Every structure is written in C-alpha cells, then in structure tokens.
Image (cartoon, rainbow, N blue to C red):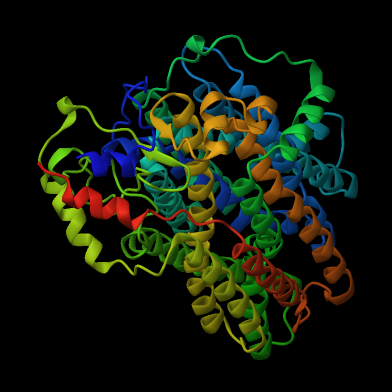
Length: 588
C-alpha cells in the first residue's frame, strides 16, 4: 500500500486538502453534451458545400469568391477569442457558455434564412422604388447583400462554436476530455452526413414548402436541426454555477481586449503553443479543400460533359454546372461517412493518453462500451497524479469496464494520439498530390472519401490535446489532482502562481479563442494565395480544362507537410509504467 501511494501520490504528508473526485460521465451524458455539434456542423456543411455554387450563381467570379470566404478566418480570429474571454467572465447562474451557445444559434438561424432569400429580399425592397429586378444595379446589390450576410453568418457560427467547445472542456472531467472530443467529432460527422445527404437530393422537388431552390431548402433544414440539437444539449446538461467563482476580471473596452489577448498569447503553456503552431500550417492546407472541393469535382464533371457536347448553350452550361455541384456534394457525403466511421473506429485502436481513476482492488471508475479507453487518472503522468480515492468510492469492476478492457485488445500501443495526428498530415499531403492523376469524378470521389480519415483526426487530436491540458490545470487548482512536489511548475500551477494563471492565459475560453486564431489566421493566408492562383490560372465560365482549383489544393498539401514536421515537437504524456505495476499489486 505504501509503495502504491508513493507512485501516485508524491506528497508524503497527509495535509492534502482536496476531498473531491472527478466523476466519470456516462455515454448518454457525453452524447447530450456534444449533441449541439451536430446542428453546428450541418450549418457549416451547408455553407461550405453549397455556399460557393450559390454565390457563383449570383454572378461572383472565382477570384472574388476567394476574397469573400476570408469572412470565415477573419470572424474566427476576432470573434472566438472575444467570445471566449467574455464567456470566461460571464457570471450568469445559467452558466458561462450556454448563454453564448443559445445566442449564437439564434443569430446563425436568422443569418442562414436571410442569406438564402437574399435575392427576394433585396429585389423586393428595390422594386418598391421602381428598380428593374433584372437590371445590373439590382443584381449587384443582391451580390453585395449576400456577401454581407456571409460575414454575418460566419460571425454568428463562430459564437456558437466557441461556446460549444468551451462547454465541453468545462463540463467533462479531466480523464474524459479525449472521449468527449471523440463524441464531438462523431456528432459533427453525423451532421456532415445529414447535410451532404440533403444536399445530394433534389430538395425543391420533395420539399417545395422550404423554397424553390436547393440552397433555400438546405438552409431551412439546417435551421430546424440546429434549434433542436442545441436546445436539447443546453437543457439537459448543466454547468457549474459561475456566481461562486467571484467577480470577473475588469474589462475596459475593445482595446483592452486586444492587449489582454496579446499578453495571453505570450503566456500560453508550452504544450498549447506547440499545438497552435501545428494548426497554423495545417489549416493553410485544409481551407482550400473545405471551400473549393465541390467546385473542383464540378469542374471535372463539366469536362466530361463537354467532351460529349462541346457546343452547349448558356442554359445547358448552367444545368451541367448545377449537376456537377450535386456530384461534388455526393462526394462530400462519402467524405462525411468516412469521417464518421474513422471517428468511431480510431478511438478503439489509439490507446488513451491516461488511465481512468482506480479504486481499491484494481477496479476502475466505470466506463461505457461506446467510450473506449476513456482517458483519465493521470496517475504518474507528467506533473500530475491522482489523489487516492476515498473508501466510499471503491467498487468492483462493472460490465462496461470489462467490455472496455476487451476493447483494449484492438489497441496499437505505439500509435499514440500525437503520432496519429502526424500521420494524418502526411496522408492529406499525399492525397492532394494525387490530384495530378485524377481525371474523372469517380477517382475524385474516391480521393475525397479517403480524406475523411485525416479530417477525423484533425477534428479530434488537437482539441483532445488542448482540452486535456486545460482540464488538468483546472483540476489541479480545484484540488482534484495533487501536484508532484518535485516539479516546481506543478506546484506553481496548484497554487495559481504560474505565468498563465497570472495573465489569465489558462482560462478555457481564452485558450480556445487563441487556438482558433491559430486556425483562422492561416486561412486568411490560404485565401490570399488562392485568389492569386485563381487570378492567373482560372478560365472563363463554361471553358473546359480549368485546373486552377487543383493547383490550390496542391498548395494546401505542401503546407500539410510543414504541419507534420511541427507535430513531432508536440509533447506526449506517458503514464509511468511503475505506476501501472503498482496499481496491479495493490491489495483488494
């Protein structure tokens, strides 16, 4: 018993004051917690898969379209850090995050519907003053109005995304951060499947009451599902009451926000800085794929049809391009299915970073079969270790715990989360290089489907690494984890004297906001590079062999290689093997 205590509890004295334990949450809890991600992802999928064709149909050029999509990165770089900081300082009894989630969802729903009906709204308003609906002035006004609401929509979506991500980190226990983020990507995967499945159908034919165009019907469906999923999640999962945390830090306007943000960036914990470095280069690569892959497949489809009929009329060209968009959406449906399958399968073969909290007799806190390898414990890991569980919490292994142990048979011990993330960058780069050999929509669809595997890891690994680090530090300060006294940094974290705590750089909203800057800022770079490539390589509408989108995708693949190199610098927490042996020797 003494040997075991030395391993998991470096504190030799009995003056440890923490008497709480982190409760392992059920699968149902994690499902409800992340359900809002399903509605969020449907909104994203509608914008990413159908936004470009919709704006092109209004008359925008591809080079102008690239500049329009700078709205997403700009809003992510500005909105998420601001929302994160505001929610950290929120002291409403309903919680820190849920007010922002609900507000963001409401704004997103309004923005989607206004964007979908932009032509009717603007055309009808200007018609009151006698403007010709078919005139250039009205068409230009519609384009400007639609572009404006693309920005409004992206700002609104970033509010709800910032709230949901912080909500997951705050509510999930330290040892289930990886599991919670795995459930988030599963929910997002289902949202993608539903969004792309709907986009692949002829919705005006089957749902005429939602509008006379594909985009109108998709926006209506996305709004309904977002309202339902966000409502269920916010009503069924509660947060800690922030009114007990004391008064928030004083805030003095927007200028002070940017000063605080800059100070927080300088004081970020080292692990979080390294993850952000990887994300910076990874997202230069991912942005072109997410926003232009539908156009890429549509161009390939047009080339095939042009060979059959090189003398198409303008109406025939429009019809072929619309059909190509649906083919591209079908490829994204396969992509979303692959992503969902990977999000379910990968957690079974990638060993968890930590083990679950253990009671006497070798029993672990019960887990559920669909939450494989729920990370936890932190015993002997890094500068954290679990305090000994109380006698009242001791119990025998449950059925779910035994099923989880059986699932561990499939784990590849050398395949850590960080190494999997590294391999995903290499796979993405290789698939982007494969565009040199793609000649038709069938091979392009296969390529897009395979990209679902690295996309699943891109949406899981960095958020799991970040949330685990955030939650560990928070649990240390709240007395749920005791520090190793031999580690000076751990002692400073426990006492709240580290640089990150003093600058506010270790708060959930601040860290996730800065992380999103690392995702959003490179997208601005990708947008500018894409615009330049389109300017020199794109061909007029209805012209075959337009390879401009393919070159944008290849540029993204090169950036993924740089991200892979930076991934090797990310720290990996490893559970001390002696701690594992000691647990097994512990008498019942």
